[in-house]
Length: 563
Image 1: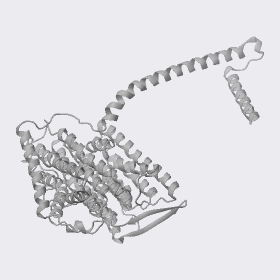
Image 2: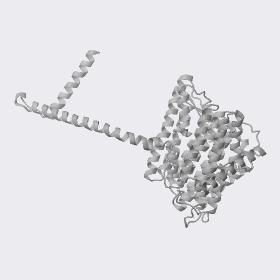
Image 3: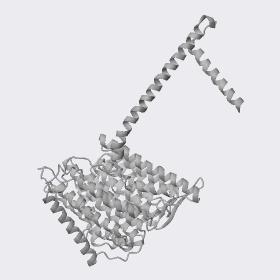
Image 4: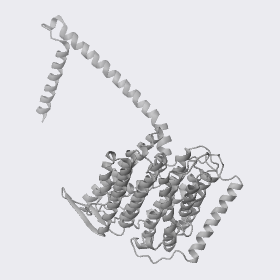
């Protein structure tokens, strides 16, 4: 059983969840995750190959790059099960477990066809976490999300087909960006990694999912894309430019966004940029930084989404303009949120610091100073919108007098585990460093790293305080901030509706003329066969059918004669 691809057991277990009572269902999910994780014990190598129609499908390949992603994906899946324990709707549990299983199986795909199958499986399973919210907004966002995810899969399949025709291989290995095949695969990965102008689906859909669904969504899709980029396009210099744009641009949107889960979605996009830059550098230190950042990001981003989900679950809103003052009612959730905020801001002794410093050091070694300063700016921006804005506006600003209680126990347990991991990894980074793809000879806690980061954080905090005191900080007002999704949520309908109306008018006119022509033809035929000169009469419809058949026979004969 251990030779099965990790994640497959989770998908099989998900299929049985509707027939299992609630508590047994949760235990079954944890058991399936544990068995899937046990499959990682086989170690590096190719463990399952299937020959199909002349293609060698590598269903289970493991190495030092896939292992850390597989470990954190299993941890994230288990945390999601605990966090959603109170929810008795089997459909969400089924979608979340199969989604996590598909992502884990994709990590171990050794060929592009197998990768495509699991790539699309993550799209199909994850969309139900958005649909489960049951609101019209969520349904529309889910359809837009699905279009982008399926498009990514279609591009991946097209690229794989052309790649096989050019090289005779479908192996998922390092590629050189240049021809049509590699560009298609690169764009497919870029969609799921939320590249600029391809990222609207993330901020559009994630905040519309259920409280528990958003936590699951934050963990798998985009990190799977980072893994795919690291596997296929490490060292591609375009990624440095793309990643730098990803780190900087979302900062401006996150600062003015009112929905705190959308703030975290913009922040997620920002953090992906650091990983993309690291993959673009392509050195061993940089790839270690990308993997380490993905590992810790899954934990602290899940913690932040869990804390905001707990607020939404207890209060019923997640709008910054409507929240505040609930630190007295939800102190544990507030503490966990602050720990997540300090982790994402890369405070020393928290997990973000020991991971992000790897990427910054690797970037500094390249001498690409413009990118280094962009990432420094983005690091300060992270503190502004996720490190300060999220806990400040959710728990402290504008006391609204909410009468509420702490989140359910299972939510607090999940948040407590994630908060513990954020601190443990920050204080003892060696276990994380030991599972990275390459040997790590790096010490994050030297004087220059600590002092440099603390200076950046202190000045960023000072800037926030000054802006708040001078009333220059963007006010929290009810609004929806659109990103690249503006093109298809606003511009496309404005342009498309008049064009569609014109097309429909032409079509309606055409159909009207066709109906008149057919009616006139029918009437003429009917009168012809019913006239006294026609001799013995037969029913008009029968005559029309015979006429049509005769014309068909004559047409076939004419075509055959020409041939």
